[in-house]
Image (cartoon, rainbow, N blue to C red):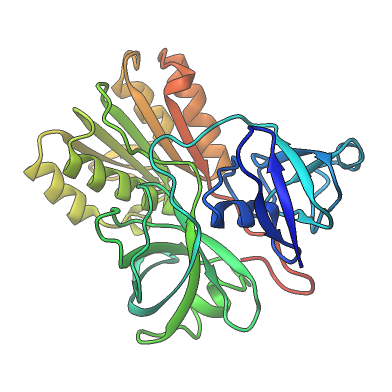
Length: 342
């Protein structure tokens, strides 16, 4: 069954299947609704249901309380329509640059390699190209479960058929330990859908950019670096990648070579728990040491929530304008009933 959904921005209504979230139906029709994690953990996609009724799905009270649900709020990434709807997004953020419709894709695993401690590179060749913006992510479907897990593309948009993902192992994880670090092999077929997310660098900007990543938060930043340099979108990029030890760093040779070949790019690996000949300490503290002022710069941050929060505070201390800070927080996916998180 399908229902009609009208967004209060005055655009044309779109059709929404009763067994799909409002967000997914909107993106498939190339209608924008603000979103980030797409798994009910961040609250970016909150909407007010002005008319009609939704099934709220699986909702964490810490993200959307019972009182909020009773007042007419819902998470667009979890709620599905029970009737025709009129909704209004609470977050007015709009994507910068092109909008790419959400599509289902299939592909073949080309590469599956351990690249750092508890970290694998997964490369998939799609049957058909996926249009996306540098910084966005896709949802990989775990076979036999119907569960989707989110991973950012590490390749630039001009490689639209060969997608690269960086995956960190989670103990007991349905998608990681149970599949990507378990049964998955090169040559296997894989299902995914994308693109998703509003973290991206797509337009030329006059100010240099500071990119800060923790762990596999490097993935979308690698996409942004390659895209921005290829398209000459920024006058300069400083990329900071934090890990506990050298075993947590990866693609070091790639970034060192890029730094040597392109004067616009500078690479700063940082270790928090191991002494070496490079920078040590918290990656955000190293940024503070390197910049007396961040005024007139932009920043792109990706990694664990605590790192992203610390980075925002550090950049504001150095007088970076809040509107110039863009962020993507990596959170652990919610567990399906009777299953482990991934």
